[in-house]
Image (cartoon, rainbow, N blue to C red):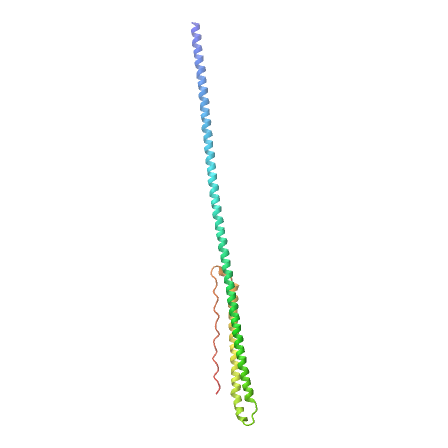
Length: 208
């Protein structure tokens, strides 16, 4: 009887030991699985963070490239506008210098022509005023219209000279104004104002 009780207690103890071992094995297995799941979750989180960082870096690099491209385009446009303004200012200055040279040459020609006319008239006056033996009175009569012609020629020469000088001054002012404002030409280049023509004065009627 005692042997049976001992055998039963031994079996119960063995069963308990076996159950305990199985429980420990199951706990260990569950712990390992939990650790594996946690490690896998950590890996997935790390991979997701790495992917997000890569996308952020790529987006930042793309934005920087676009900003750089916009800056380059803006610099090119500014340089082009500056070259255009400089070119137009040079062209306006050259046109102004040509106009001034042309006007000065015209003034010189007209002054020279007026001086030539005045000399011819003076020669005629001298010839008319020279004493003649046979026709003293007719020479005296001719001196008055010749003097009037000389005075009229001198007045015309003076009027022409004033008109040309006025035209040259107006052209020079227009050219200086066009050259002095290159900054405004970036948006809309100023057109050179046409030189005003001096009103031609009517010649005085000749004395009969």
